[in-house]
Image (cartoon, rainbow, N blue to C red; front, side):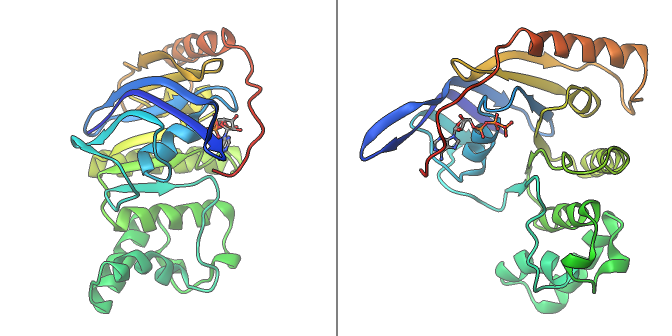
Length: 258
Ligand SMILES: Nc1ncnc2c1ncn2[C@@H]1O[C@H](COP(=O)(O)OP(=O)(O)OP(=O)(O)O)[C@@H](O)[C@H]1O
């Protein structure tokens, strides 16, 4: 579904190339696979996700979606960010319907499809509410409904539940797995949390700094549905933690505008 070969990213100023943000990243993501990208802060996880989303372009290397170069964002690759970026002036229903309207669908269809997707995430009762009246977890549910309504083949998620309390986070993880098992999207999920990666993923890609690239590619063979607290899960967590502990911390270049 997605393949990166010798991907390299650097941001430059005044035509000069800056330090490498990603170096020699090669990776293939299969159809329907749930992949977590794990690594210390600053090792390039979000940059890799932004490249796949088409928000930024690689400096060199090949980045393909279904065999074609990724040059820009597209509806087949939906993105869920850490903070739900809902339009504050639109109701929950209108927020979800917005992308459908942009596709030129009739208003009635947009409303029906938006409501259906709000039902899927348990938010249909709040269709007429405005975002400021919702909790963080509720907003993130709406953000997921908004992305799912566009029926993407790929779901790109950048620490989507990291700002939520532990209980809400676990409930949303369960719901995400339920939706993924129902619709079968390819999921790329960035996280700092070893436990989250072990619970969610078919496969965990561990990234590290200096140079920023892939250090380990671990299949997670645990059967589904998974339990969070089992000996097998603890063994996977220990193994991933060992990989992370072997990495140095990242101290990256100062952030500048691309
Ligand atoms: N537009 C940019 N210009 C220059 N450097 C950038 C830019 N965007 C990101 N970087 C740098 O790239 C490096 C990787 O950043 P990135 O956000 O991809 O890491 P991350 O692993 O997702 O970090 P975190 O886990 O803290 O979100 C950092 O050193 C960051 O400062």
